[in-house]
Structure formats: structure tokens, C-alpha cells
Amino acid sequence: MSLSPPSPPDSLKPSEVEAKTMQGASLMVLRTLVLYPVGFVGEVVLARLLAPEDFGVYALASFVTVTLAAVLEVGLAASLIQRPDEPRDEEYQTLFTLQILAITALVALIFTSSPWLFPWLGLDANIRWTMLALLLCPWISSFGTMSCVKLERQLRYVVFARMDVLRGLTYMGSAVALAFAGAKSWSFAVAIVLSTMVKTTIAFRQAPWPVRFRLKLKGMRQALHFGFMFQVSTLTSLFRDHIGVVLGGPLFGVQSVGYLNWAKNTTYYTSQIFTQVVSRVAFPSISRVQHDATAVRQMAQTLLKYVNLFTFPVIALFAALIPEFVAVFYTNKWLPALPAFYFYSMRMIGSNITTLYVSVLNAVGRVRKTLQVLIWWTVADWLLALALCPTFGFTGIAMAYGLSVVPICVWLVVELNRVVRLDLSKSLFQPLGFSLLAAAVVWMVKGKFAPSWLSLVLLTAGGVAVFILPLVLLEGNVLWNEGRIFLDSVIKGRGGDEVRSSKCE
Image (cartoon, rainbow, N blue to C red):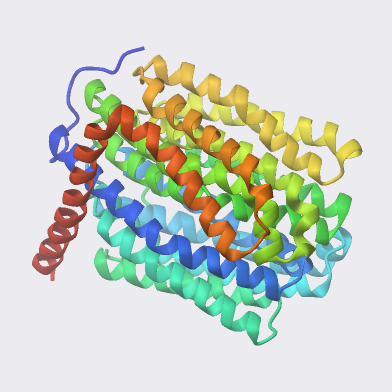
């Protein structure tokens, strides 16, 4: 299936969108490079200060509140971001009202049923009160959702970069401070409420809109249909990505959920922290040029290549050195989670493809097909987890994640090829091959070093060198030129947004 030829009614030309996409991707990667060491150090400190049970309490509490409420938000926002024409004020207000009503119903249901539901699920009072406190987050964030839609439609990625940095610093700083003070699982809860307030405040100040409760559904059939389909797709992701909570909690207890949550979070910081921010750029940008097959292919190809160049070596080298990282930084109490870590690492490699490909397919309007893929992916995850847990315990859940992603990647590649065909040789196979080579070299030589922070620095640096050397020999000139474009994009992107902000003010 090819994209239809007419251009969408949008104020930006494909060349302008492509330039803003490069600026956005560059700024979001730069933002991630700033947050990465902060997040890594913060996770290490929290892992040392808190027990696996504290991680498990937070994972269970946030699943029902923050995560489920985010599903209610995502679909409505995506329906306005994806459409070619600018939404009217009453459309923003209507979707805001629908979001508030849905969140309020969720809060009321959880609050009124908690005295009976939580004991039936075997949740202690700690989890119940943490969960109720976290219900503040969806109410707070709902006021910034429509502002974020406006920012994404305008491709103002510098605002998102600034917002994410401040939110990340707020979250990690407050979580670590509270953990030092002995707040245990409440460290996470208070931190996420504070960081949500920071995000909402910045978004609304940068893109204010006339807040009003209104229900005017006439003429919104298409937007609501797309939003519903997107919402269901996100709901499948919710129950797919939280099998460790939904299945692991009842079967293996809070401690096992803590192990799985640690393994998942640790691998997240090796890849998806980059992949998801680039995916955030891909969806609104490609939505603006969804009828131009050439522009869609160029953007998707470039984004996939650089996501993999940034993340594949990190995933591979971290997996090669994770026993030493645990011994030096995390402490040996996390050793039971290492098998799960390896399978989550496999999942993250595949997620580089799935996250970006799903965003591109949604951006060109094939949300029904992505929903089909995601439903089958969720079924595969659950069936594998149920089959593997009796033999492998809580590690079986991580094994299911690592195995199921392979056929889903193949399916998504086939589906996107029906729209635009990407060349995977340099954007996928080359970064993966060089990353595995670097990890193999590090794995073979690490036995000659005693675990210490210095040996980890030296081994990591050596692995990075092994990855970069063949890459430079094959594509040195291309990477140099594109690196200069990256820096130019960061500078122009920052300056352009400052000019725009001053005009708006």
C-alpha cells in the first residue's frame, strides 16, 4: 500500500518538517545525555538505600494509578496530534473534559473499592495509601495535556527537552533525598507527584489554552475514533509491559516484583530512555508529512539509524558487565535479578524497532494495523509468561519478554514495508553487529580485572572503542558530516525556540 500523493493542509513544508525533526531529535538526544548520568546515579543510590520490597510496593501502586491514567491521556492527545489541520478551541476543551471525567471516574472507583479490593488482592496498607496518594498525578497532568498537544503540533521540541530535564532532576533529586530520610517506598510516590507538577506548569506556561469544561462532540467523530483506537493500543501495552506486576505479584510476592522492576528499569536506562524520546519526535513530525512517502522514509530511516547507534552498544556492553556493575554499585542483594536483566536486554534491542515502527505506522494513519499487532503481542507475552513461570519462577516473565519481541519485530518490518521500505543494513544490522562484537571482546577480557569502578570505566571505554573503530573505517566521513548537522540542529533549534517564545510573550 502506498501513501496517497496529495499534501496535507499544513502550514509546514516537508523540508521544514524534516529540519525541525532533526532539530527535535538532536535536542531530545542531548536532553537524554544530560539526564542519563543523573538517572543512572540516582537509580544506583536508590538501589543501595532501598530494599527490593520498596521497589515492588511502588511498582504495584503506580501500575493502577499513574500508568492506567496515562492510558486515558495518551489516546485523546494523539487524536489531535495526528490530524493534519489545527484543532479548534472547543475540541481541546471537549477532549480535556472527557479526560477529566475518565480520570475522576477512575479515582472514585479505586478510592471507594480500596477497603474491599485491596485486601482481596493481598495488598497491605502501605501499598493502598501509596496508590491513593499517586492518584493526584493524573488530575495534575490533565491540565498540561492539551498544552503538550499544542507544543507537539508546533514541533517545539526544545520546550520538551527543557521540561524533561527539569522534571527528571526534580524526580531523582526528591526521590534520593527522601530515601536518605528513610521514606522507603514513599520516596517514589512524593517524587513523581512533584515532577508531575513541574511538567504541567512548564507546559501550560509555554502553550496556554482557554481551560473550560465543554462537551461538544459534533464533528469530532474521526478524532474520537482515532483516539479510541490509539487508546486501546496503549491499553494493550499497559497489560503487556506490566506482567511483572499483574502476574508476578500474586504468584511470587512483592520481592520478586521488586527484582523484575529493578531489571526492567536498569535495562530501560540502557536504551528505551533514548528510543522513546526519539519516538516522541517521530509521531508528530511524520504526522505533518504523512502523505509524502519520500519524507516519511527519510525521517524514519535517519531516526532508526541513530537510535540504534546510540543504544545498541550501551545495551550490549552493560549486559557484558552487569555482574561487575552489581558487585561494585548495586550490591549483591540484586544478584537474583540478573537472569531477568539479560532477557529484558533482549527485549530492549527489539523495542528499538517496535517503538519507532509503531510510531511511524500510527503517524501515517495505520492505527488499526498497529492495534492488531499489539494485541497479538500482548497475547504472546502472556502465554509465554504463563508457560515459563512454573519452571523458571519470576524469571519466566522476563524470558517471555525477550522471546516474544522477535516475531513482532518481523511483523512490523513487513507492515511498514507496505507503506515505505527502509534500508536496514546500515540502520539496524551494522550497529547491532558492531555492538555484539564489542560486548564479546569485553566479556573475554574482563576476567583479567578485579571488579572496581576503575576497571569498569576502562572496560567500558575499551568496548566503546571496539564499537567505534570499524564504524569510523566504514562510515567516517558520513558520520562526521551528520555529526556537524546534529550540532547545528541543536544550536538552531535552541535559538529558534527562544525567538518564538519571545514573540509569543
